[in-house]
Image 1 (cartoon, rainbow, N blue to C red):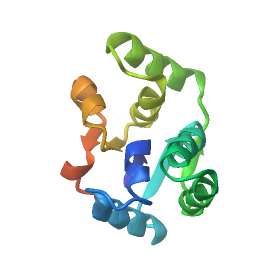
Image 2: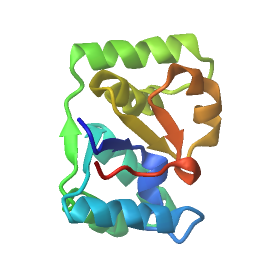
Image 3: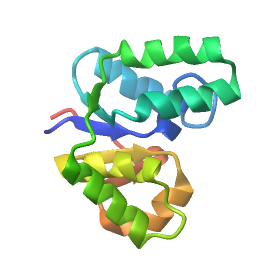
Length: 143
């Protein structure tokens, strides 16, 4: 799955907010829109993203923002038993890791691709697991 990545909620929020890292997310979304890369996310992404945006902005803005992300044709991955197993193993192994965060990482590990995150706390806990990179350190490949 060359040129395929998982973006977690912390990265996707930057696509609608003017925060540090927003420019990098815009570049990733540009590459996605021009069909040079593909994006996978666990199906729970829609719920987590809307929950976060609803708290930060409002419910109407959440619907509009979700439509904006989904219209970029990300592929929502079903939480197959093996992905759930990987996620729950991460939750059990690392104190304070949520199933939501682990689900994104599990999708990346299952598909042998890279999770791009802006969540430094999560990254610092699980970086030794592989298949993960911080947004500010990532270079998206086009091969």
